Length: 512
Picture 1: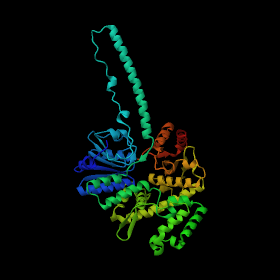
Picture 2: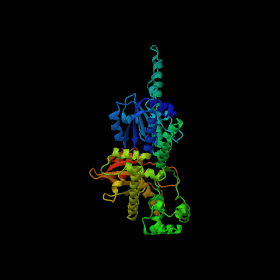
Picture 3: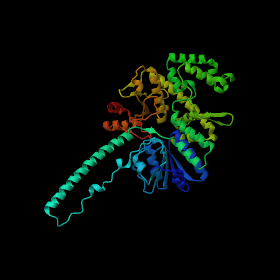
């Protein structure tokens, strides 16, 4: 059920309890966790934090800890599946779910006792009505109890005929209701999308309780930025927008970039320096110079509105850059780092007391973005992006430089979005400009598995709903392909490499 008063029905309820906190591996979840941790520290709430990257880890962690806790908090996981069916908890267990994944599972919505949804109801949820999804069958089994033992045989026959006709009518109505239910659920569940940032939800809670701090506001901003600034960064050559529109993977694109810099009047010596080391006269007018030249080159959206924060006089960070840095730390392929260790390091980077960790994350993010542009250039120059009919497809091969950086969900999704945007800017095929993209990258050479991600078409519309989650499930079921649907984002799966061809064939057939 939806919680209407977060303070009374959630926070005050867990304030005097020992709670278990499950946090998904994404930046918005980390920021929501930081806000909740600050609130818990303020009120001396006892909690245990467990990072989870997928359904298997969530199930394993729950089984390990379920005897010690009654109250469980899930951040950015659990809303879009039947949580009780997956975890099989005791009847007294209570789950508070703060999750940005949509659509919300209808069983979670209408469970009044164990599932408490910390979700803003002003989101466009469009949850089906209870009577359209759930039905009480007691009436179907009731028999008329008004028969008299002294009734005449003719009366009994008439009564029996009426009951048979009534039961037949009920069965027909039941079939019609079930068909309508399947249609309603299909329409409701076919697309995956996202709601209000979980960090924003937690900040609203802190604000209502008058416990909001400037650090909490910053974390809410970073969490929100994680949702909408997925393909922008401050370095000119490595932003998706500029790289795509200049077509920097080509010689002509590199020439256009030089023309752009010349139009601004920026010497190459100044361009290659860090911003802090540039001449003061250039720094003061840089924004106006970029915007004026961008308009000439047809790039009206080159400027992005975002937030920044100062830690003292020296340290200034953009929210968008913090998102990339934190993501890079969390999905770092460094050999010595475990998944839990990477999660804790990413969580620590959001604190002002761990700026060295944040700077390390920024360096990793720069490396990742350079690798992203190199792979995009390789894919476009060698025509690796091909049309499969209803969608575009691109597969990265084992041995591709820096391929290990893109085996994790967030990194591969970001690469896929950047590649699709660049492809749309470069292709002359109008139909291909409207197609979604499916991308595959090697996951484990030993197990011969791939990570597969689907991203929606590159459009100007704000409606970015993703239909690949359900399509992947049906394609795997129809072909018996060995897939693992373990990620909280349904449009990311793991696939056995030898099953790739039949899986793609089924996906083409399904979406045609």
